[in-house]
Figure (cartoon, rainbow, N blue to C red):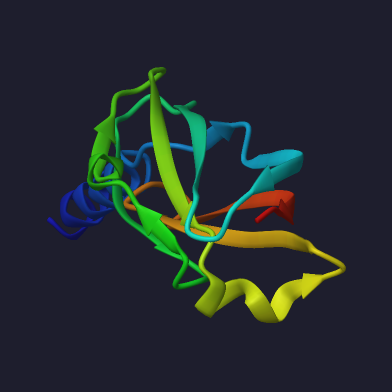
Length: 136
């Protein structure tokens, strides 16, 4: 009886351990290079990610590292095994939040975004980068 319970416990643990989706793969860094923008313009970063696992993965939360970053509501999604999804982050070129990073008229924008999942890896870090020349 003990061996049956032990066997069942091993099978249960293995099935739980391997029932998680992921990993997420794809372009996890977007560098827009040199761009020009005005204060309060919006800059959109779209990450095309793929669930490279054999089980679905849920995107539970997308957390910006700056108040200027906003996560699209559609980011909360389930990505089927082998399928792709888009994670969209909008950056508000906010004078209040980014002016202190302005050097010679350019903001060296380099911020991360954390994607929280229920997959094998619980968190992924995506990067949003650009050299933003502020124009009047």
